[in-house]
Length: 109
Length: 112
Image (tube, rainbow over all chains, first blue to last red; front, side, top):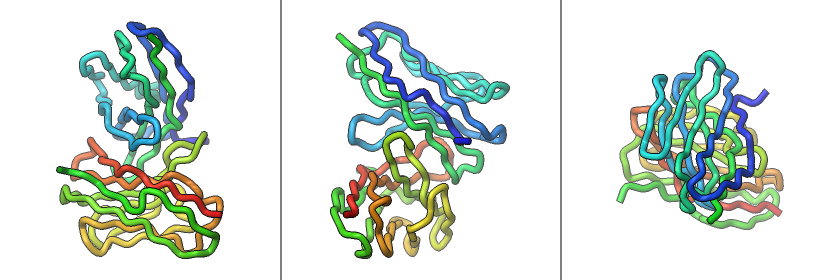
């Protein structure tokens, strides 16, 4: 079983739409959770960490559900510039990181 | 500018010819790591290092070696590359907090 499972999409949404991605993880001892953004052929960049109480950064909201072992990312008012692949990542040691396969998002004008 | 650099960025080689991909960071980070990214499999961790002379295996270490003789450098060595090591490789580093790994620009390796 994979440590982290993520719906690969693709998600094609119109500008202004709200879109949500989920990511499930298998190790209940996982300690830290992240969402990364990766543009085509580029390196991943941290979008936001995910905290137990949920956290928001502008149009982006991340949530953690420990009981069901999933994290989510909500993007409101989608922009064309949000088109990218979104990767979730978890770690339970702080040294070994497990990434999802990524969810592709295309925002359409 | 704070950054992680990798060289080469692109490499085509043949089976069995030893190669090294260099990684260097200028942020004085203790932790460094190597990943490979393949379609449908995502980013998988190869090796990581918590500090100088401290390295450990990630999820897919077979066929790779690393060394950490200096804090800033973490080279990835393929002693005898094989075609199944054709992939996009990323080096990453982070400081003492868990929060952010900084990734290098990637090295696209093709083994014929």
